Structure formats: C-alpha cells, structure tokens
Length: 152
Picture 1 (cartoon, rainbow, N blue to C red):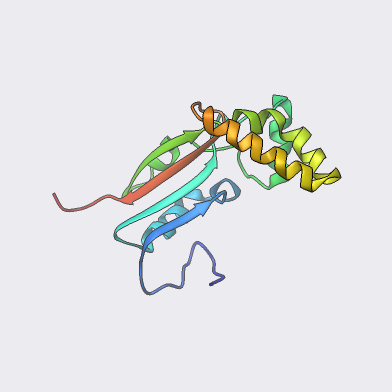
Picture 2 (tube, rainbow, N blue to C red; picture 1 turned 90 degrees about the vertical axis):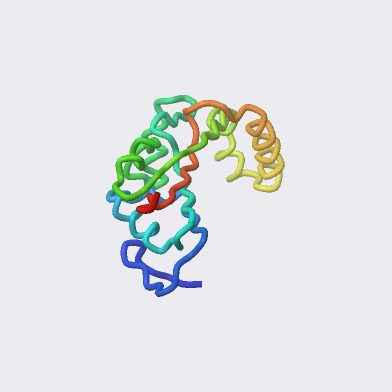
C-alpha cells in the first residue's frame, strides 16, 4: 500500500488496471489528476473512474447541493464529455441511476445513525432494487479511460 499525491505518482512501473472510485468529484483539477493516473497505465491499461453524474439528484432535489458540500464535492458531478475533452485519452462510460438510493438517501442516513444493523439490511435491499432499475442519468457514471494509441 502506498500513500501518495495523485498528481505526482511515485511509481516507476506501470499498471494494467487503475481504479479511482468516488475521487474526481473532490478534485478541482480533475483533468490533471486523470492524466496523472493515466500516465501510470501500461500500454493496454485501463483506468476506471466513478463519480456522480452532472444530473445527480437526491430526493428532495433541493438537498443535492447541501449534501454535495457535506460530502466534500467541489462540483455536483461530471459527464462523459468532461473526460472526453482531455487530450491523449479515450473515454466511454456506463450509468448507474441508483433511483432508490437517491430517493431514500436522507431517510437511510438518519436511520444509519439510529440503528446501523437494521440500516445495513435495508441498504442491501435498496441496492438490489437499484440493480433492477439501473438505466438513467441522474445517478452515477463509471468512466473507462484508455490512452489513445499513436499506432494504426
């Protein structure tokens, strides 16, 4: 395990896969951070990022900005286009809408403070429901990034 500045990685070797889940929404200069991680990829390596989408909303929607600040986000979310603009990288994505998690977030958070064991079981049910209704763009996106190849 290594603790390091994500903008200046100390690795000499490269990696086939790098995962950065729920990180980029906390970083102002997400493009430089993403390029730094991509620089540590091997020739056929893949970088997977997860982040709330730009259209991320919890219920009721007026809480979204407050919750984002509480979570330490510097922006409400990202889109695939944000990462597609970064030179030398190729990005594609899939969405996970998480409708039940977003709808019941406030209640689940309060319940977690009162009774974590019961809340844990309810959260597993919510996750199972969200798996069945994953389409949509108001939840999270998972972005797969590869280096653009300079060969034909």
